[in-house]
Length: 288
Ligand code: 8Y4
Image 1 (cartoon, rainbow, N blue to C red):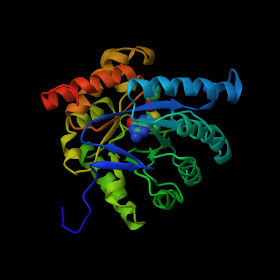
Image 2: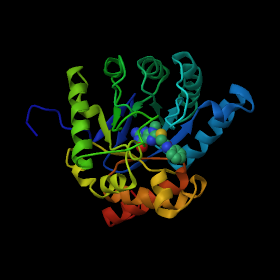
Image 3: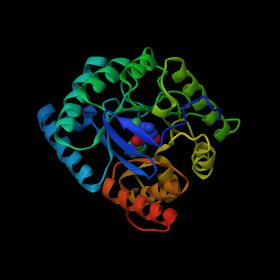
């Protein structure tokens, strides 16, 4: 690395909250997609969402990832106003009630801006700020951001994933997106990278990315990974999505030993334990 560049982050400054990346953290997932509030409407949904957040925070989550757009293959597109209606009240309430960093899972410039105003502390974009205006919106917020790799679009990404060399190709993509961030004035100290497990990858691609995570670690950028409940775990274990907890905690522990610093997961208490076990082994010491 050349001397005039700012080094990548050891600490993320998330809207006034410092996150120390010298140890691994868990990001709890909070979905606010419509299937989750078909029953009682938005008010009841907010109430049950906040109870879920309380559990994840009590278990030790450092981040809560709030997402209002599904990236599932057949999921319908969501308008800006609908996505705002879904995520902003939840972000507002979490920021008011909990000591945790809110991560906003979105690709849209308007949502990035509104979430930052509501107090979100991290931008998590599975499209790596490639949508119109997203780079500039992220730059303006001064927040840290996660750049994730995806091949194709959610609708077609699993049709025929194809790489010359998956590790080299994903790294090259992320380096291009880092360069794009730098053109709009985003400091390197704000950037987190993510290989995007399951986003346009076969099981073998995902396994190669996990096994060779040291090549991502060598960039110096902190690494976020999401493996929780994903089909890779189903392929390996033969289990349906609701039976993948043990596979997911095993994958979380492996990712930490490979150098991941933020683990995105549905099952926070179990994932926290897995991360603690892996970290204790790395440090050869408990606690701290
Ligand atoms: C069951 C439940 C099976 C959920 C699959 C899934 C990532 C992410 C997602 C990730 C980052 C998901 C928003 C996909 N995955 N953000 N988001 N990294 N940074 N699928 O891997 O959870 S959504």
